[in-house]
Length: 79
Image 1 (cartoon, rainbow, N blue to C red):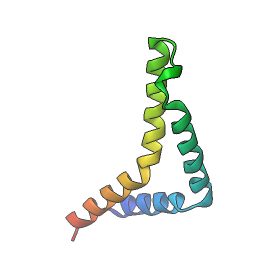
Image 2 (tube, rainbow, N blue to C red):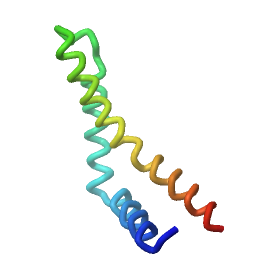
Image 3 (tube, rainbow, N blue to C red):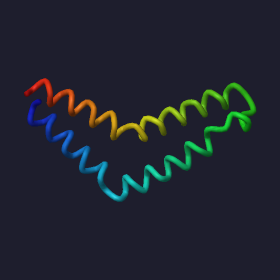
Image 4 (cartoon, rainbow, N blue to C red):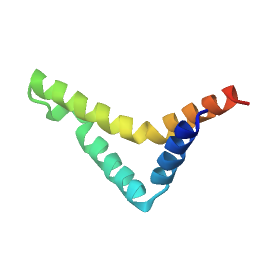
């Protein structure tokens, strides 16, 4: 792993451990819960918009796990 990539992951993990990130993830959970109701969707356009919203929120929610997995895989290649 290059020093630049190592620094990238160290800074990302630092961000993910901050209270602000933890608070954001709580808000994201609430948003996912409120948006994940297809009964309130009136038309196809709204459905597609809702899917996009959920996709972004789920990406944020999974960022820690995806980052950890990528870091482990990169670290294993350099052993």
